[in-house]
Length: 251
Ligand SMILES: Nc1ncnc2c1ncn2[C@@H]1O[C@H](COP(=O)(O)OP(=O)(O)OP(=O)(O)O)[C@@H](O)[C@H]1O
Ligand SMILES: [Mg+2]
Image (tube, rainbow, N blue to C red; front, side, top):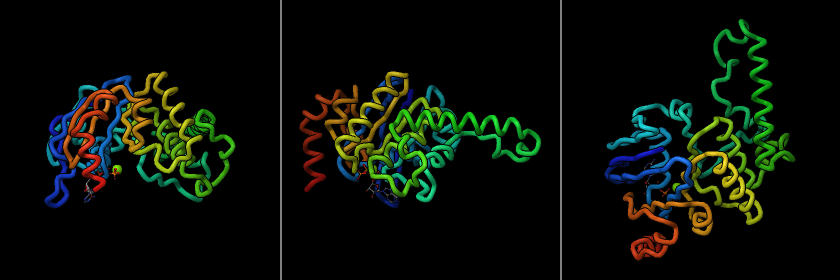
């Protein structure tokens, strides 16, 4: 589904992502782990298109997308959440989810005047779909609450809801468990599994290795910008180089 070939990105003199090549299989839940500052979020930014690589190719379903703008990648099915969710605080959960709908007719010049019925129909469809997604993510109770009132975990669910509105094929999740209480974490894990069963692919950055082990078939480990090792969760967490990288990062 997604292949990175020799992808690098420097900031000043520092290589945040250093010659990374990896494969993300379609239909799989793939993990991306590594100590703080390893380059995981930078890699997400490169894949999603909010940063341009200094070198390398990013191939989504056979097409090199390294030069494509973020909105085109989103339209081809590649969606991401942010490590720190930034919902529009004063807007409700429903409004935040609706804002994520793609290609709304009402946004096109003149559509509102020339095709008011079509615009209204599409808005009704989007509102229906937004409510279904909100229900699926157990946020219905909060549908009319301002996003500012949500807990950390509820904000992660709202991020996921916004992403689903774009009807993605591959979802990049940046630390979906960070700051989430244990009960809500189970909801998030369960929903990821349900979406996976419906055919969605995931690439998940996470420090919660228990969550990674439960969800992922393959895990890539990064350290200091480089891909250290790829394998099953059991294999990589038992690898001495991975243990060293985490201990080194903590020191
Ligand atoms: N916009 C930027 N400008 C300069 N340096 C940056 C920028 N973004 C990231 N970096 C640097 O790149 C390196 C990798 O950062 P990145 O955020 O990708 O790490 P991470 O693996 O996501 O870490 P964490 O687990 O803490 O989220 C760090 O040294 C960071 O300081
Ligand atoms: Mg990060």
